[in-house]
Image (cartoon, rainbow, N blue to C red; front, side, top):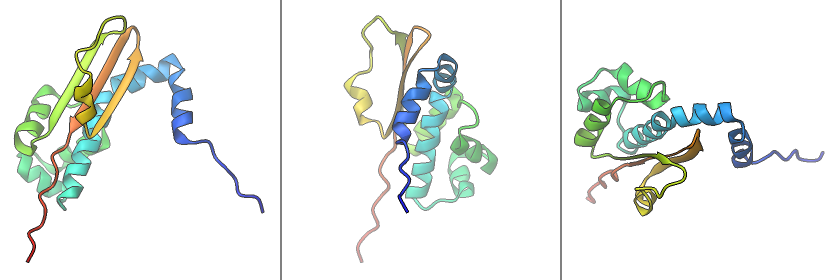
Length: 138
C-alpha cells in the first residue's frame, strides 16, 4: 500500500490567501487569532484552568473561553487588561501598503504574529507572551 502524501498546510493557506474574500476574513480576524494563541499559551504554560485565569483577570470563565476560541476581536480595554494583569505585550500596525511600516524588527520579538495585505492596507498583529516562572529546585 502506497502512503498518501498531503499538501502542506502552509501551501493550502497561501493559496487560500489569493482569494480576496478569504484574505479579508483573515485580516478582520487577525487580532482575535493572535490573542487567542497568546491567552491559550499563557494559561497552559502556567497550568491554569480557564476559571483560574478568569479569576486572575477579574472576569468570568466564558470570557476566557471566548478569547481562546478567537470568537470575537478583543476590545482595547481587554487588551489593556491582558497587558496589565498578565504582562502580555501587543503590537498592532495598520498602514497603506505603499508606505514604510512603523513595525519592523519589533514584530520579531512576538510569540505569535499575523501579517497580511488586504484592500490596500498592510496589517501586522503580534503578541509577546511572558515566559512562565520556572519551578524552584528542591
